[in-house]
Length: 160
Image (tube, rainbow, N blue to C red; front, side, top):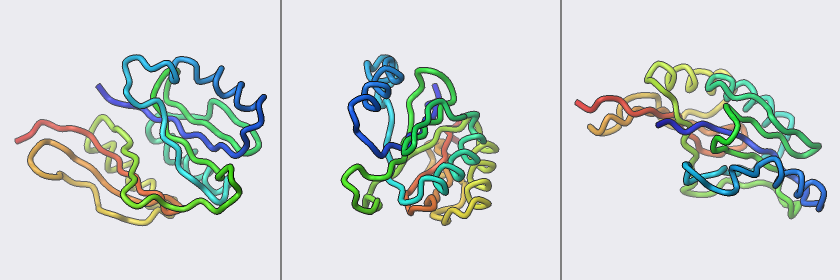
């Protein structure tokens, strides 16, 4: 089973926007077959973050499914787990969490390679080129987005 990705850009918690978000995310918030509903990353530039994730997540088949002034969401399919980016609600600058990383699931080493290459093309910072990690069949490439958030793209292969 592979996990797919949604990205959210959230900036305001006004009641009507929050209700709209809850209604749209209904199945994701109720749980089900996925342990993670979504992950949120901070951004200091909504437009640059949106352009980065539009192009990056298109490599995994995701597209926008929800958008507000300070909120954008991408999904590869309804009900799939997600990743989000947001301008912090408290008005302070977004900062990177030490030890925090988001893993984007791919279905093959070739897809890992192409998503990693797209991230580099979009200005991401290299944190480890794609390749096997250990002998468990884990294949991954690591990078930081334009705000410094750490991500990887990975797949499981037949171990050796």
